[in-house]
Length: 183
Ligand SMILES: [Zn+2]
Image (cartoon, rainbow, N blue to C red; front, top):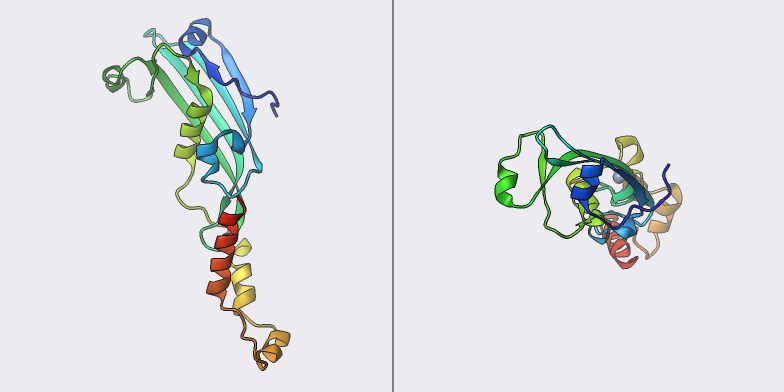
């Protein structure tokens, strides 16, 4: 595991001319737009960037990101661990016009004179890698709902009293509210 933080910005053309490798780690809270899509702050993101010039003289950035994060299971609404991996070869270009003429194995990174914001780049790559919906394995999921749906003997007896057993959908709604209020 790499522990040094990823640099904030990089002159990607200069780095590609020199054939530099840049590596570092990030936490989900370092990437607010990505963090919004997660269930919590826990996790680790490792990024490795290989910069070089290809045979055509293009400035190329090969970026590999591995992340372990926590997302919300869309079935039971509880957090679940998720591993993400992203592997992209980006060609540094000045304009959208240049971007359109890249060979298919290269994705464009439109970059002006200013240094590239590496956190923004990692954020984009992670958001692309994140599945739209995540679910626990069936065996690990639904246990909470099942527990609420099937009353225990003690609960059955308690049901004879005035208190009604909670509706599982009310509990789900409470859990959902709880999640958003944890911020
Ligand atoms: Zn689940």
